[in-house]
Length: 247
Image (tube, rainbow, N blue to C red):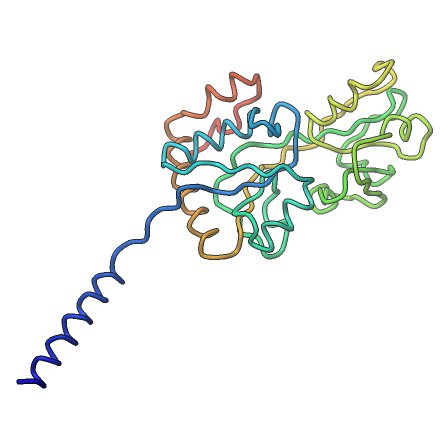
């Protein structure tokens, strides 16, 4: 009888363990997202188009966003080390050790800023010019025929760089180009040239939590795009809606 009782206790214990193992894990209650501070997009106080989009993605699922405002290259490093769950503003497959989702959440409108007296610029002629952009953005991987370029640490001194012919064109997203141009005492000395459109992604940490967050994000984005729920957010910020024509 003692042996039978011991076997019965063991079977009950194993049964309980199996039940616990089969129970689904609780969904995370927060996601840690790092981002550079971009004006009217990812402000440090949580305002901006980018934060509004991600709140619509995660908060209806009961997942709150914990923001971390750092320079772009640092945001990538935090994800690679698993210190945050995701970073904003990524171009697809740009960094090793980072997971990328199926869905982008926005599109970067890439422009060149140069002197108004410069010849017309296009992707076909870009190899002829000296380019400059902020370190970490890796436009050499996304623009064809790039040959001569320098990277700068911050968006300071760009206009004098162009005026004194230390570079021919500054490359950046439209909002950042407009920010730099807004500092000019005579904006008519410069001109913007549209180059291309690059989808923007969250870059997720390559760990189980990051994979879970990526799956939640893709599922939710598919719903939001199919129902058009994100369109009012883009309209409120007076920005082009990037998902027209999406299935």
